[in-house]
Amino acid sequence: MEEEKKAETKVELNIEEIQKQLEESEKKCAEYLAGWQRARADFINYKKEEMERIGNLIQYSTEELIINILPVLDNFNLATPTASQSGGQAENDKFVQGILQVKKQLEDFLKSLGVEEIKVIGEKFDPNFHEVIEIVEPDGKEPNVIVEEVQKGYTINKKLLRPAKVRVTK
Image 1 (cartoon, helix red, strand yellow):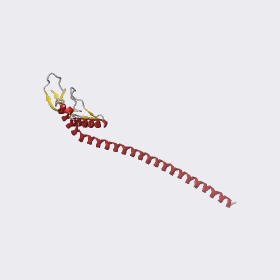
Image 2: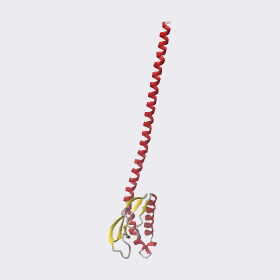
Image 3: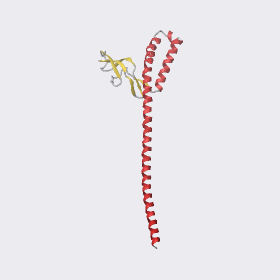
């Protein structure tokens, strides 16, 4: 009988030990699951931040490329009035037509990237988009009105890329 009690006590101890081990295992399981969930959330956040960083890097490099292309477009803009002022003769010239077509392609390419020209003539001076080169006498116009564009300004996706250089009334 004592042996039976000892056997029952051992069984009860074993059940209690097993329950303790089960509770500890459940705690560890919950802890590991929470840790895994935190690590997964951290990884997802890392991926989002990395994608944003790569997007910003691409956008920055695109802006740098466009800034380096703008002087070429400026030269095309300087050549365009000269070609059209030569009495119509140059407009029939295939070389001039080719140059004008290349200029148009370049403008279309920049437009497809979100580059837009800043409109200036007759507008009020805005230091956020314009850079004053010279202040001229009003000549019957109200003050701070742009009367001449010296160099075109551009925005890319509503962000200033290059300010327009202008002459403004006093």
